[in-house]
Image (cartoon, rainbow, N blue to C red):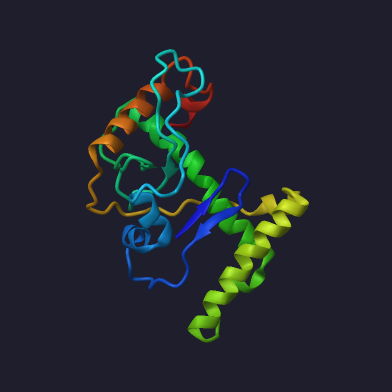
Length: 196
């Protein structure tokens, strides 16, 4: 489980969970997930969205994939059922934001090539290698910035199977607000209709 900022740097990682564990289960058991659920992350107070005429304060959110439940500060895409244009745009915009995480992993694995193969080491040493790679990734990225060769990795999003995790009422209300905002004059982007 990892949290990545808008500069492709890892701000929180949870390493060492079993591959058979679901992402939502790993998240709930992580220190980050526990602090988020207990409201102990010092997340800034709700604020109106840019260019939003209504001025309704919205929470700062973390973007997740279909394996996670909606909550006060976690948003996920709609399932792949028959979707309205507005919901498709919401999914597109959320996926664009989620791509930061995928690209951070991609550029890290291209920089630290040890991640291109199975690690033939003791399990606890494997965790240390991954932690070191995350720290070095952040250090090099902050020192050198984004370099062209780092961008050569094609950031493919893995298709996730939705799980039966339900969101809370605030998460659902927040998602519906974002759906309307992303198609409003103040919240839309010119090319989003071409991408759905």
